[in-house]
Image (cartoon, rainbow, N blue to C red):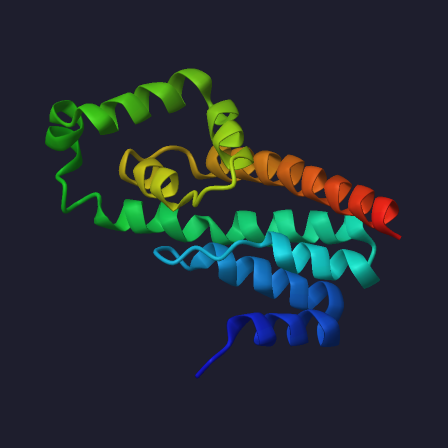
Length: 160
């Protein structure tokens, strides 16, 4: 049986930043079985530059979130976008929220350690601008990873 945590740990230990990037990309690409990135960031912070590791994780995770966006974009024809958005209250709320608040809302939702795929799929369905989506996700993930890193460093300082 495949053990993702052992595979990931080996990848990070053997390939350092590149391995961390690949793991953050994979954990964001997996849409319906979320894997938290925090344990891998903790591992990386023990022997790599923790702030650079946080930046690498934010970049990899942001690129991985594009999968949800493209899934939504690719399936939007199934929903016959024009008719369904007008009749679907949830999609209409998401569309109005993203159009009014731009990428600030995407960034805010990226701060929460929950899977972003649902928002990515919805953004793809309503054809939200890709660049705004990616920038918003990156800003939110970068702030979250920096907070995680600060907590890890504080914990290391307290317990050593």
